[in-house]
Amino acid sequence: QVQLVESGGGLVQPGESLRLSCVASGSIFRLNAMGWYRQAPGKQRELVAVSSSFGTTNYADSVKGRFTISRDNAGNTVYLQMNSLKPEDTAVYYCNYHRPGFDYWGQGTQVTVSS
Image (tube, rainbow, N blue to C red):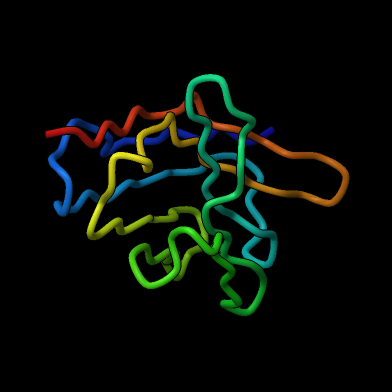
């Protein structure tokens, strides 16, 4: 079993920054992917960024150049540095740990970007 706990969400103004953290516990394998998804009201959950094996990262086009995903050396904590936030980034952000054949999810953390 894997448990994921997110933190770092909040209310910010456009142009400001936030850093999300997700700590995983349980049977974590460093080479399995961890990432961030988000879901805005009335929309489907979408991929934001993922850190795969050997440090490979991928980002949604909408966040490229503004968001950075990173993972600690132990492989059980993943971060999402979000800069130049926009109102359209408002969503619940979910941490994901992917094991072949199964996905684990955190409880979500709210990010609201508003003036």
